[in-house]
Picture 1 (cartoon, rainbow, N blue to C red):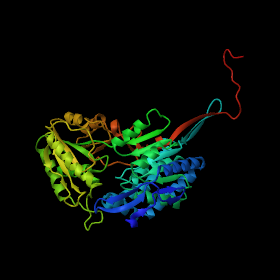
Picture 2: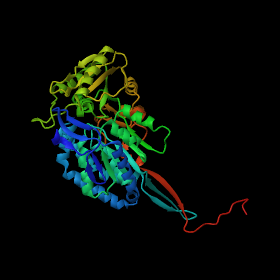
Picture 3: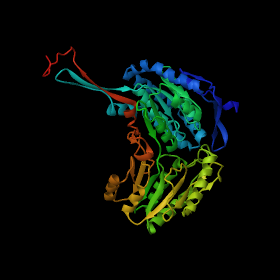
Picture 4: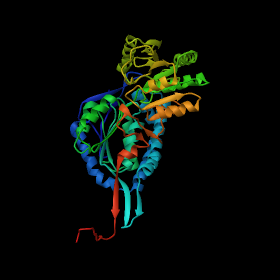
Length: 489
């Protein structure tokens, strides 16, 4: 275990041992430890927030050009560490190496996208007026707490951190204890890039560390990606505190409608990539597949079943590159079995039984359950490679079924009829809508978020600039102005 013991606190440009409890991250493919550290204590979390508060004045007044230069240097430092970082991500959370490599590339690309987003979404302007000038610029909030998820432990928190720093905020980052290694590479890349001390701190640990960060005095904003349970708890915690900015991304129970495309094999490909990529551990994965009754729907499901049977499951560094690896833990794998049993009790018909533990205790070969004639299941996000199937008589019924959720993150339509797509765009209640593309096809150059329990109306990705700075309107005259008004001598 000692070879995995790391420092768990990055403060004022240096790594320190945490003084909290010991936590260990388990590689879900091998069940061996991949990372271990003592968590940041409440006192260390408070120190990190205080250091950020102290650094804020100088960093917020650093020129935009200088901040961009540091972030561009950070991108180069990440790129130089790309292979090692991708391996660390795969080792921590189990995803295929080709996926982790793509994640690192998205992290590097985020800098240029964030600069463009800042210019378009916020930025500055000045205009002449009758009395002098009007002007608009955007100011940073102060200290942002960033809480990262395990499924994209580099890319998703990076998508908060980069725009926050670009706007002039300071950041205290708590990575997921299930996949903390990426945070080490990120912090070290920032040091190499010349980020001033105190501007970014990292506090590692589990729930206790996150609680300490949320309760720390001096936090001006909370930027969170994770489950609806945790996100709504954060929302409740800050009720009555409108001065704290909350940007909460909380997943979805996403629908994918398949409606008579000519190429049923392509439809099956899109189902597999929508529902099962990253072992179903993307918040944009399709959880509900909606198909027409009849022969075409039967054929699509048969083609999907065939792909599941051929699908390569394996460790990230296996001899054959896998399509998917394990889910994050043995406990999560066992939840899939319990979930499948629950759907059967409700009257569901098994189309493909999830095979749990065949390739290893945390591996799950995808499953599908027909719920067309069953009792309505709970509207929840099962973060695993499992899909409910619904067969419907009409396209209107498909739309109603798609919208029957408290969430609203992603939705998709596979069809060849442009008129149906135009109708779906206006009818589907989701923030990310894909036509003949996987539901997981999100772009950093677009907003990422949606209505309902998928967030709190603060979408991330390209729109992260919106919650990282507030507008400051100015009216200016070079000299004091004499004013007159009726009734004033």
